[in-house]
Image (tube, rainbow, N blue to C red; front, side, top):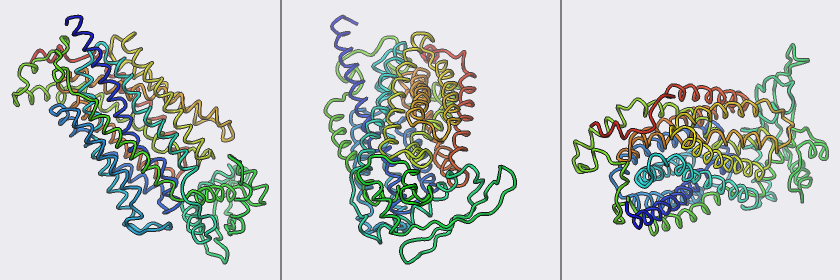
Length: 560
């Protein structure tokens, strides 16, 4: 390549990296906002963790197959139109989600099935459109970046989803804690929010209130003249030996609601134990009423978690259309010399393309091993990303703002981890991304184990730092698997390979979505972390099985 052409190529290379980075970050604005809206949806409509888990599993699976089909399409379509149109449709689906209760004429209370179905349909549509985010990027980057630089530069690009998710976490944390309508003066509305909370979440509050409680057997709610009487039936482990049945009655009267509201007034954060002492009520009840007060003062805030990111994403779609272009050929530049394949001169031959994709993707054992490894990586990643805010609020008693900040820090450390992993791959492992992935999964298992054994009363900052280090480790493989798949399949089938690998990643939602929801509802959060640690260990073993694999498949491709 001539000097002037090289200089122009570099400019376009970095323009493509930066534009697609911002574009993919905006996809996350209208994809992960549902996770931050879940506490509000649970409070206002009584949707259970199991229901959330089913929805997350369905939409995750839909996204996986959409990404696969869009991968096949991306290898044949102009990325500029593909990506910008997909983001616009995602933004419209997000806006519609926020308006769903208004359009159906449904107010707060126990949600009718039609509302849950409407939510599920809109999330399914959104995830169908979300599949047009990553595949065009995988195709573009393998055309613009040589294999020996792909790990470093694509790791820089991969920070896009962490940037998007961390900015979204901060935005939605702010929205959930400041926006919405204050209905705390409406006793009927407060009663509905109270019923939703105690019927779905109060069992966990009781279980965590004492390590002597072995099992919460049932929660019975009876309406009183001034609210609800909640009968908590549980097995008490006396001196860690013989159990005995206990029934404690908690009084969720409007009078106690007002007392807790007064105790919280003017304070950014207050411990449930302080509220319990000040209001002379049991700690589980204080914690529950604290959440009920917060949601009654910000009713409908969850809708803004869809409206504001939706509008931002619409602007992002416009930016993609204006600034993005396709492959080097589309701007009059030559293709990279070291990425030439047997298909370059025969790209219009359908039979030749089909045979090429079959050999480089579907009959390539390394692609299949990467796909299986991706399943375990995504179980750990999505368990934290999808359930993190809810876990930190319910299991560790953090505020909405602190939980949002914790997930944002998790993402920021993920960015650093991706950059370090990409640099280490090219610097120490000759571009062999699968080797870096092995060590990253070992680190993820280690830090999730430390997190599991941290005491309940540990300082929040220690909790957040350990979780952040787990993010540092897990985001390396998340980025590098796509890089490894692109290199193994070559630029002519990079999007298809990433689509196939992506299906396995999003099959993980049966574990990270439905599995986590069921575990939390029936056994508690501790079992979730045991499962995540096990998944990280198995993932490391899968990467170990391809330790001796080559860096890329260009030599194999030219043997066709």
